[in-house]
Length: 247
Image (tube, rainbow, N blue to C red; front, side, top):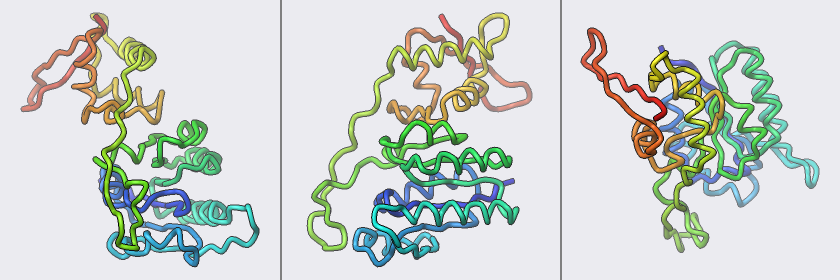
């Protein structure tokens, strides 16, 4: 059964170019029954969002910037999130922002038993990332990023540049995977890959094989000589079960 999710988007610091891939990613985790985006729609920097809102059934919430230098959008989004929480209509939240101001909100929602997914750019501060159950970087969802000269609505430019190179698998990443395998391994050192993936996510919410150029965890682990991968036939199952261990 699909979990019902409330998708709340901070329109002030999320590029509209990612919307299609972002909604496809969210659909993997549940049914987005509430979809809202917050911002001051009288401002020109949100113009690019207007064309994609109807296509994705996202409800724009107007929030005027009453005071210079204060982010009224954050406050409106936080208040709405708490109203939705107390309505008991959803099982989880997807907070789309690269702003650390939502760290406390993510923590509070999890305290209430909600599943919290965060989506933002790689510049997102660590406190917000670790406050979520899972955090997905926008950059890994798209094969190309908008060019700096992309002027969007003006009809000029619109060129794309290739996405920046993927993150390297550093010794720190290898150590994280190795210790996680040890944590869930049996007496022979073998660990079911599904358990390894789940624990990696709990230890580091932004861990994603796509950050390193791999669609799945299996090829990522297979690419590291330190690990051994074995495929086993499951009982009464057509599917192969993947086990890994430290060499």
